[in-house]
Image (cartoon, rainbow over all chains, first blue to last red; front, top):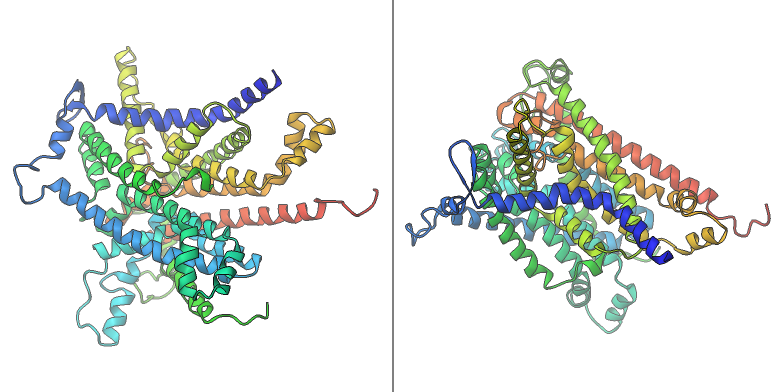
Length: 293
Length: 292
């Protein structure tokens, strides 16, 4: 009886959060799925079953073969940006986390330096994007500098509002999502295992490859999930840093929304969701997230 | 200490320093450029030093009504912060016992965290649109919309902040010594007294951390707000809008002001956390101090 009351109390404590997620996350997802199969005209959605949202999205995909249709091209491009960002954030994030976890010995310094990496995360993403303009613009510091030392005659145009600046900004904004989980995994590695590895005659690289990386794998996977899902659905960074010229999976949805084609936007959201779930389930094959928290 | 550092240390320390410069360098560039002289442009060099662009932001001349969206973002941020703290602590306590749906809630929270923001935003927008249609069809012809800052907007922000709050609570309770509560219970404390006088003081510094996440994530939120705020804008939305139209440093001034609020909140939260921790150390344990 007492036990029964206790679980009831626990349930009540969790209920408000559950309610928020039900109203503002689960139900909206349901609506996205339902509306994706509705009909629509120029200015409103029509609650009648239709796959027009999907067929419009894949328009020309068969007719234009062997060349790729817009949606496939866009997805391939998004995947490319995603892969580049993932590789860079992983490389940088792993190195930074490794330094913090194994080379910073005092606890206080560890906290201070971790905080130093976290503070930008608490500030505005848009501002951190705009911040690249004075550096990468036509008359920005980089172009001036390169012209100054005589490496280039004309300003480089591809520095800003290009795929380069998009990836740069994505790495700038989201490496944090790699650092934290990888650091979290590394800090829990028993230091004696590393000593044992050295004692057994392994070199630094061998220890890194055979001891540290396998034990840090959960953090790597969690960080990868964060970065990949963020980049796959991103439309803000790609919009601002791409000068609104680069297409992406997220931007298609935004464009459909601006045109008030809700079922088409929803259909694209379902497709994006499907692709994202595929990637995540492939990654979670490697690790059980719940166990790692 | 005293042990000789391996060579890799210096390489990694240099790498880390470069990373920190990469993180902060561009931000400081725009903070400096926001003090650009009246004839200055969007890039270096500085053409004199002035507060002209801050004045432009405050007077609202030329650009949208920043003051109003500043206030809206601040209000929304505070409400989101409060709700994130209360709901996360409450749910965090629940997760210490097993209850029906515990793992479901956990996975929903994770899903909400990693869901591409545009999908969540679109879903909430659809939900409110359908609700409006439904209300109008039921006869309330003068009805405009239920969508707004503190309905759909608030909900959208919570789907982003609550997962962080819950994860922080997990981290707290992973390290929490349950025997302290048992001791309180044995001494006759009611569940509320145990929470109020034992658990809460111990977890308070981390709870302030949840508040910090709640406010700053809401204050800067953009992607999830984009479709759910209704007819008005929050500050990040205004800022994003300005990126395509503004060619003067007033956008930097606005960015500096926005960041100043973030830094102020971060600073306050960290000070509060440090004070609380210091107090805990002072009052924490009286073991070995003899009878009082």
